[in-house]
Amino acid sequence: MSFGWLKRYMPRSLYGRAALILILPVITLQLAISVVFIQRHFEGVTEQMTRTMVLDLRLLLDAVNAADTVEDAQAAGDAIATPLQLKMTLPDGPVPQAGMRRWYDFSGIVVDRTLKTGIAEIGPVMLPEDSLAVLWFDTVHGPMSVEFRRSRVSASNPHQLLVWMVVLGGFMTLIAYSFLRNQLRPIKRLAAAAAEYGRGRVVPYHPSGANEVRSAGHAFLDMRNRIERQTQTRTMMLSGVSHDLRTPLTRLRLGLGMLEGDDVAPLIRDVDDMQHLLDAFLDFARGDAEGDAEPVDPVALARTVLVDAKRMGQSVEMGEIITDGADPSVMLRPLAIRRAIENLIGNALRYGGEARLSVTLSPKALVFGVEDDGPGIPADQREEAVRPFSRLDPARNQDRGSGVGLGLAIVSDIARVHGGSLRLGDSDDLGGLKAEIVLAR
Image 1 (cartoon, rainbow, N blue to C red):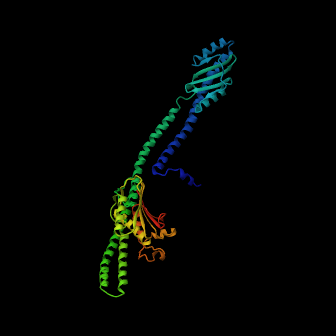
Image 2: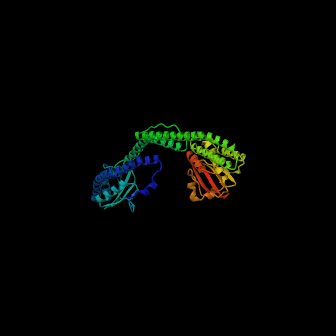
Image 3: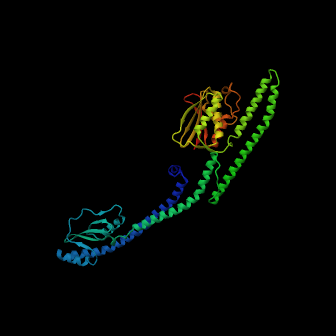
């Protein structure tokens, strides 16, 4: 049997599920005790007490019916009712058409049933409150009413058990929840440290809690340290390779510059392409390891990139800036984000004649958008376009320079380090590609 439908109604958070695990058994236990103990014990006690009252009422009714006159019946009834602490009224009318009982008075059901089983002459049974019971009887002298304390036929204070059950159940639930919260706190700290590391932030973390949580914490630290070492090793290796190759490439370019002839220009262009490849490799290598996260104003950062682009003669305009009343300070790696935006602008101007930069800042997300009027990227090729060393169809790259297929990959890598993603779409205004760096705050 599948319980997949039940998942929609289950709490999503760990605290909610822990609370459900604690509260559900307590409620189940209380319901079981209520059914087994209260229903059987208190109903049994009530039935036994009511049978005892039936004997007293039977004695009173026989004495009243045996009298010759109403006065004799009243005197005989008083002689029996007074010692038994009963209040008799003879005759009494009008007689109610039906008995009365509150809907939640479950013991009253037992009282009414037992009285009518034991006394055939009994009429309506009135149980208006917890402290009073009024009965009507048909006698030879007319209708008779008898009043007595309700406690003589019902177990006294049955609600006290329910109150104690609820109070003690709630108290024990609070104690258990406090202990469980202490066990869940290390798990939340581990989840927070992992989430921050996914956003490119290394926060202090010390494993604590139960042995299993400690083991998971130590495994996370080992994984984080291993990733940091691998990243540093990759960056150092590619930086070293790029630095070592730049010197011979520079000498080669100088040597080619001293030569003459028509065959020299293609060779110089090849050297420039190799230099461009090395720079792209280095940018890709250090994309997730450059600088530390710090508070940055994204609007000011975007304006700085725009000014520098215009200074270099690039056709870039500032588009829409939406702040939505959010805090202007965001934890970012400014050098990495700057390089990502510059890559998007360069990519836009490579395939189009105009680019537009926009910033959207909300309490939950930060979005840098770059649009162009170029041919765009088909929807079925966008996933392939962000892969490293991936190039699209030759028609798109025709007469556009020698790309290495790392521009969008670098941007995607930088966005992923910040806990975000690179989103590609169509520009509604310019008609080309719309690339957005979406970062969660």
